[in-house]
Length: 451
Image 1 (tube, rainbow, N blue to C red):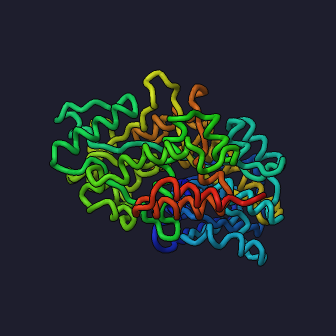
Image 2 (cartoon, rainbow, N blue to C red):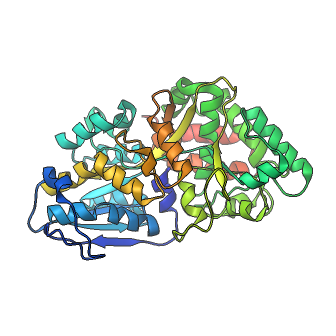
Image 3 (cartoon, helix red, strand yellow):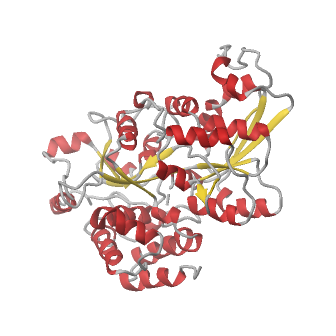
């Protein structure tokens, strides 16, 4: 799934985080820290009196604090008071709030499928010319498409993530002479080698995420669909050009099942296969640090969870405590293909101050500001990769900016909500719990809306 699904991921953190910034007037004096804002970067957005914009989303805790900081100078220089409220229930509630006329001015939605649902309801305001101009300049056509519904452009991308990283301990790999796998077969062989050694299970996995439990498993399936069958088949799958119970989908499930349904492979440092369902995705990779497992499949945003309080006790680097390699291709000569996710700030109120905020959030200025604060990446081509907070995130931005990369958005985020945010998640839980592949994919196929 998919904040990812980064936004979805952060939505799953328990509790509600609230971060509010209310700064009026471009005085040049910051209330905190005594610094001065350089308003030259924000002149194009104008200045406002008694203007306020509310923003809602799934981003919580440390990430919410950083989000607020990313627009602090903009708010001061334009005079727009910005109030952000994050909630773990945002995705479930936003359509109800919109229907009742109680939605925030801007909603940061982590799924193109949810964006489409809100647009179908007639609740969204199309993006302004300034927002569209930024997207045309700084984003690929694919990313613009994700913010478009029925020919109308509603929202620019915000942050991004790359799915399919395999987190590992560089020290453990070096001590055992293990090589980074070049193919899926190599990864299977490495996993078997670790299992045969008998010291610990090779993989640690957590699928628990509140009402969204199961989504980390959908990421596995999506990664294998793209690598085993290519981008064209992946596109057919997420748009129902092929049925969900197509033999190619079954093949992807069965390949993933060699790990997730195998007592020899999971769940290192946690328990048996069944514990994947109860183990929170946020903590599932941590047994690597204690030598209780060796491999953990999770997106680039997982870097934040190694140091959840914002410290640097765990060094994320190729020569540090933890690092990641991308799930390898089926064949070594295959082009680089990755899945990923992102968020989209949609508007529920038509106002100049709302579009000024959205224009800023779609700019290279905002993207560089936010990336520099740490923990995230962006597919905005105006971002300097060196602004990222770690070696892995620098690499991730370079992958997103590389025109040779085949990028596909998280599949469940593109599917209708009845599938991508319901039967697919639930099917993963049933499948890991013991249901056979064919019955699970048949159930998911039966849930696909008729129109």
